[in-house]
Image 1 (cartoon, helix red, strand yellow):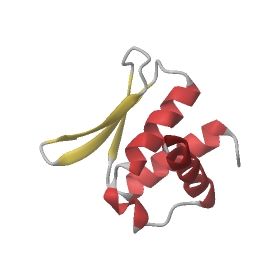
Image 2 (image 1 turned 90 degrees about the horizontal axis):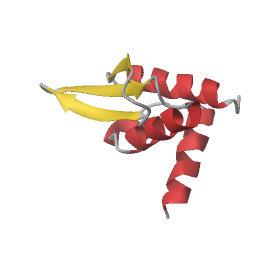
Image 3 (image 1 turned 30 degrees about the vertical axis):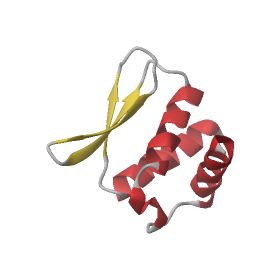
Image 4 (image 1 turned 45 degrees about the vertical axis):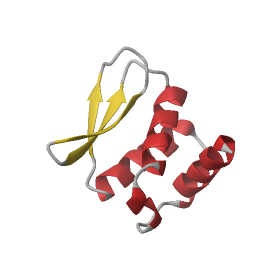
Length: 89
């Protein structure tokens, strides 16, 4: 399961497991992001962005969620997140 679309769906499932609402919106192609509104965490997924950009923004958001270390992450999500962190250094 190295298909970016499958990885994206797995990350979105992880958001659901972390009680992060995902809103799929047309936002101009920038990719979306995570925010908190009235105490609720919401990830805006930019439907105008290409797949790689959407996945990148999802991984950035997931890396910023402290609980990502304490919940089950599928191997493909864990691998993608680890690769993302390695690219940051």
